Image 1 (spheres, rainbow, N blue to C red):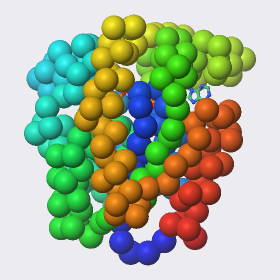
Image 2: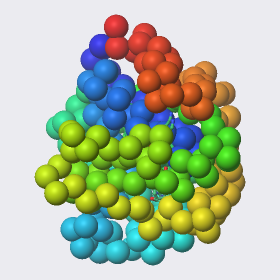
Image 3: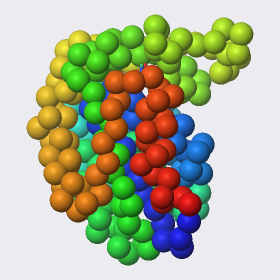
Length: 221
Ligand code: ADP
Ligand code: ADP
């Protein structure tokens, strides 16, 4: 890897598999996985003011305002463990966030090396989010049918699997609308910059992982 910090963006609608694939790509590339959704949920668990503010938007399926989201993300990528770069999952989600990231990276010896779009249909999204569950202690994400937890190998002691408050039909519908209005335009933003790679997200997790890795391999060899 070069001295430049490499930032890889995983783009796609809610439920595309960004978190699942970011975890896998992080293991294969060594880049840190940073999820703005996870950061907001961590704030919420810690009872911070930011967490409570974010919850009021997240529960409805709306985006948290750009200024607080950008500030939180920049604070995270400025920590030592992000010195080689990051895999960004769920950020940017608006043009303002994308422009703020570009501007911030120029003064941090970094660049968006690639944007991987995980392409899936609305039908796939609904099937995935309707039965997404995660561990309330470590946050590992499962699916009741497609990716059930392994009872013989639990992620935590006394594992407690919960459904997210925003994985309810009304919030899912709104999140899909928000994605199409505010986030999908970033496909053209990064496409014009020659940085977009598309992966078919409607394959098994292992197949998607291989395609994501193939599209990033040149960055890490
Ligand atoms: P996102 O971060 O894009 O919202 P997740 O990674 O949380 O998506 O995945 C959404 C749900 O779909 C989870 O329950 C996850 O276990 C499941 N999932 C992820 N990738 C696949 C796949 N390729 N096939 C089937 N289910 C998947
Ligand atoms: P998913 O990809 O499954 O929709 P995330 O965990 O990425 O879930 O995001 C959950 C919620 O957190 C979003 O619906 C939104 O309210 C908030 N959020 C996450 N990332 C951002 C962001 N970059 N900008 C604004 N809001 C965000």
